Length: 114
Length: 114
Image (tube, rainbow over all chains, first blue to last red; front, side):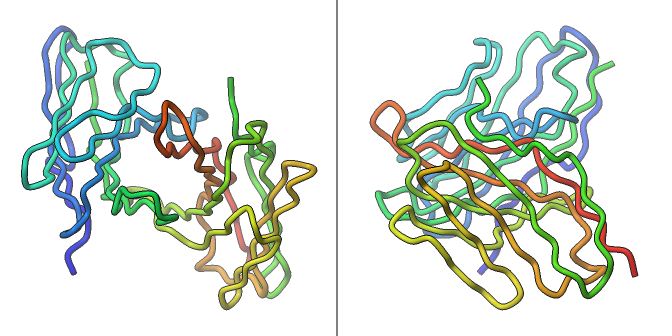
């Protein structure tokens, strides 16, 4: 079974630009969550999508948004990029029901804002 | 408010000895706990989990202990191997806004010395 796939692996953008990151979950997984990892801050929760609906959101500004498609693939968008947005963005998928099941992560997209 | 805390940013252990990684949490609604291992340039990999109805779960060299009264969990690795050198994240899952949400600690970097 293929794992979680994130594209692209690396991105370099300029302040003020916008960026879209893509995530394909494990087949059969209906939940996709996004996390931001920066040095010393661990993994900060951005949002979670389940069946094309955002059902949970972290404490990030409205410049960070996402969506999920009918095939469970998800995209995350960041508008008006700031230097502080430079980070590793991780996508994770899970079955998404009430069961205790772990998140499975992709290898992330490394975003650098200059 | 950091609800999941890993107070040791780093840990060094000799090969063959026991590694003990610690994690504290504050939210009594957390009911499922997980440990992940992360190598540089890769996404976190699920290691082991424990439900709040248990106090111990073992999988090969990895054992997780949960002390609910102290809101503390630990990961024991015995014997430690050089390939275990990585960053370890503790995570806790609990109800937030009516849905399960996973909160991560800031990580502990383990170095196993040959």
